[in-house]
Image (cartoon, rainbow, N blue to C red; front, side, top):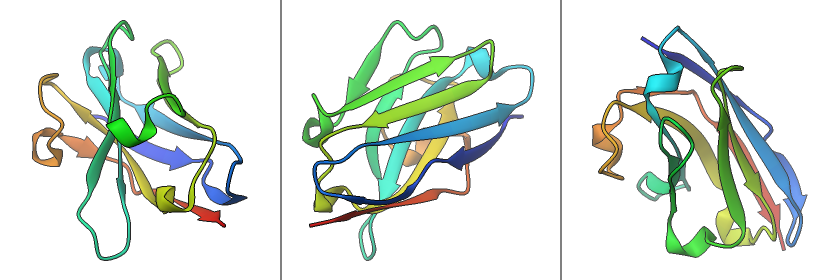
Length: 123
């Protein structure tokens, strides 16, 4: 099994940037699809971005395309989310997660999760 720990969240003004990191433990990190989800108060957890085990394929939800970039370093067992041009509506707790399946963006199909990191964007 893989354990995940997120970091890098914080308070930023609209238009600013943050880089989230997710550190993984376990020998099989490189074999999993990895993703970022977020959950705002009173809302359901939603898909943000995912990356294939090799890093060769990525997918983003429409609202973050062109602003967010997901990446991974399998040698370091790290997952990243570079967030630029942040908006107040990006405010949420951000979670990294891993799945043995690539085809779905449903949280129910992800096998392990981090504890989350808060991102707050002020207007």
